[in-house]
Image (cartoon, rainbow, N blue to C red):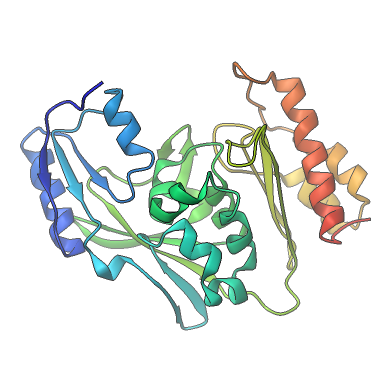
Length: 279
């Protein structure tokens, strides 16, 4: 199918992009920001999304790149998945993020897709939302009322739903720098490498552990029961057995909930033992 008609703007500053979005909303026209377009363009082609205005933020250089600031890693929202894989600062200070990026789709998509786009799209089976929750990230947004920050664990609200207002723009992701002793694990199972995961998990085991599922429910979900078992030093098999308590596991046309839960527990056990976090 062809896209529905829309107007197009290509600002060079974040504030200008927000202003254009607010003006479109005020005129009764839906507006969408587009970066890599790896999720939005298919939705436009199938007319699942029909914004009146498309705001291309790809030329806003301030939204791109990786820096260190006051003991935290700051990643611009336009930073591509391929950059996450290869950037030396990310490899050193957020290695789970670099590792997880390599599981996203295929090279052509990683070259175009952006971390901000993945987070704002909030696909329940996407790797990056779960990773930023596990890493205790803070997300920075710019809207008509100004800038604000929100913890990643409070950002995701359900299937493709977030705490971002329609007129707000995600500008950067801020992640605490990993210490040399920090430990982590990541695992997922997909039918083919690059497919969406049937179930996946991101684990940060420094201090109070964070175990975050993706591909299991309606978004990234922390697993309190599994976290408590890991903190108590339980074996990996017991941690996996305790997992998913109180979490509603999704069923779809590919996998029923019972099968997905079994897959998830196997993924968690293998991730924990593979990383040496549990025996």
